[in-house]
Length: 357
Image (cartoon, rainbow, N blue to C red; front, side, top):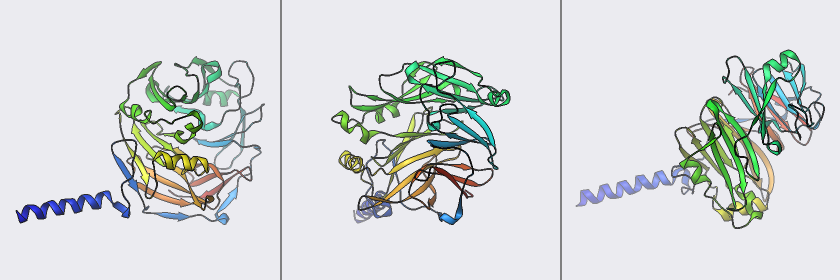
């Protein structure tokens, strides 16, 4: 009996250590499996002297993205919404996309983070898909052919089952697509996965869609932004106000919740962060082998700094990069030339730093 009691106590101690990792109690997550992160095996601090402003002629920058050997910068210039530059010298390649009501024209300026860049769908092509909810269409552009011919080459196709209040739409490999919308009847954020034009069942999305608020004024506490794995089937759904990153595989229909040590994930805390404009996460990017998010640091309700947190798709912390500024709107990495690009919102410019992941 004493031997049995010993093993019972030992088991309880081991379980307690697991649940208390980093000295913190295990937080609540949306999915059954919850992974907590506290420390990072590598921490890098960047100083202002490490960066340089890139010399480009873009004004009123909304965001940017690195695609293949090009830098895409979205602006509100109606005659050329997106400006393109070659890497790494940043020579101008021209403008693309215009406002208007004609073929392949946009009804409103479009941030690049709301578009999908797909490769491999048709051999040798890079396809750019831009949602136009008001027209219930997707503008699909053959990017490489358009650059070669100096004119847009593409088509307009129907968007599947557009909801009343759509938020975003992404094209995924193998004719899948992912849509988010606000559901005013259920007071929730609704996520849907489509195969072609047909909605598919997903246990993971059903769980995530189960989070609700009491009134529409609080819906902001549930907002999230998805980070898509290029060419893969994983998504990191980052809920900035709730402090939860739900990572899932939409083909396997499995996933886990990723939460930082000390972060309260209950709805009351989420609403409080929303009211104080203190989001835990402020944007991110998905890459083949990892994803990264902007983490915000606060002191007495004031934003004091930002970092980039890198994780592999299994939720393991990889690198923390402490940024030299606290006004970064978005970022991207040129892995080939080992450069980190940052959007400085206050100065309306893009800064780049030497960076080896």
